[in-house]
Amino acid sequence: MQKDDYHDDLTGLPNRRLFTERLDNRIVHCQRYGDISALLFVDIDNLESVNDAYGHAAGDLMVIRLSQLLNASVESSDVAARIGSNIFALLLDNLDADQVERKIAFLIDRIKSTDCKYQDVTLPFRASIGYCFIGPKDSVDGLMSRADAAMYRSQGSFD
Image (tube, rainbow, N blue to C red; front, side, top):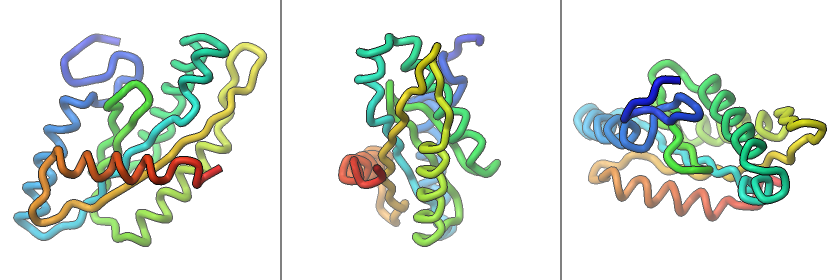
């Protein structure tokens, strides 16, 4: 995969830099036109323990599988990005709270049912997802802090 300043080397997804630019543009759009967008943060809960037990190649496999799953689960107007070693972000357009909750339930089911085999081992796959909506006075940093806090509050609730 060709390296650039805007995409994650391992997954090919937009990286934090590109994601924050797109999030900033979406904030402006929502504030100008009154559209609704949700920001989701997804954390691979057990990535560190998988790395410790099986090595970084196993952890990389989990990261790649989750990136594929998330990228396949968003609409063309949405954005899936890898913004940290085990943190992904989704920017979803035109969904209300019920639709976001259904999307999260769908993602959790897909994550739980994802077959992630490394050598002869099926790796345990767990994730936490938190979200917030773009508000009329939000900033990139404020939104990302709120989504991050929501993600950490959700840890363990999808087991």
